[in-house]
Image 1 (cartoon, rainbow, N blue to C red):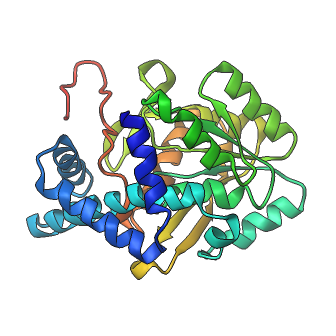
Image 2 (tube, rainbow, N blue to C red):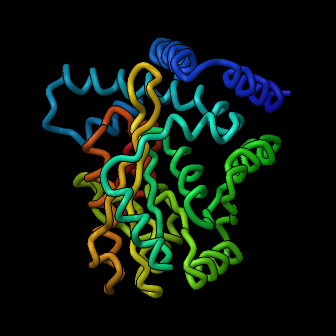
Image 3 (spheres, rainbow, N blue to C red):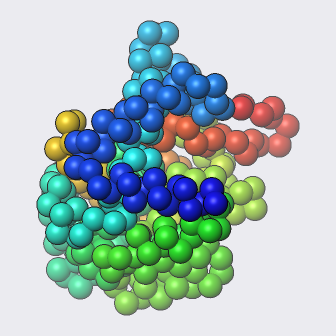
Length: 292
């Protein structure tokens, strides 16, 4: 019943214009700001860690902006997964670096798309799958009853989703061998057994090695992309930057550290639209106390 209600709510959001959806998302964000919940504390902790030089007023402003943008992320999922492709893509504006990605694809080369949880990150997978055959790593939602709905929405413009297991990893290597696009969210905690610690905003963060292993083994260029949510429902601006070539070279530890640096550079452009509600520093090095 809970999953059905969530799906019904997302389908309801899809009945409105993007401007109206963002107004509704703002209301959701304000509710999260003032109704007690753990998300508020996680956002405050992450901002305090990652931007220690901000004044208390600046930190509080960023905290509020971030939670409101989280509300918009929730509300716009319905339109992103359900609107006709022409309607959705008409809202996408190509910004810096996109032409370089297109030039790479025109040379019959593949690319690894690293899309942090920044801005309207669902848009990146949908947009890129209209450019070129694409295979993306997919972690099903915790609520299994929503898995089919979410997967259908993410695959509807041509992307192929593969699981976060050995079978999925093999599929990613095959896709790069066929010069496809491969999409990965690079800023998730992969679990203690699947990552190594590398600095992220000055703090050790358990960081995935998969993206670096793919880049090193196949020498495929890495592009960091995010969709900036424009004000007043004016759409999304795609930002794209090619990662420095050292990401494609051993040692693995250096490549992983550079991956985090590139994600930081993206976040610093629009920090209010980053998913600060995620417990990025949950896994700690041995002997360190919990942060959250």
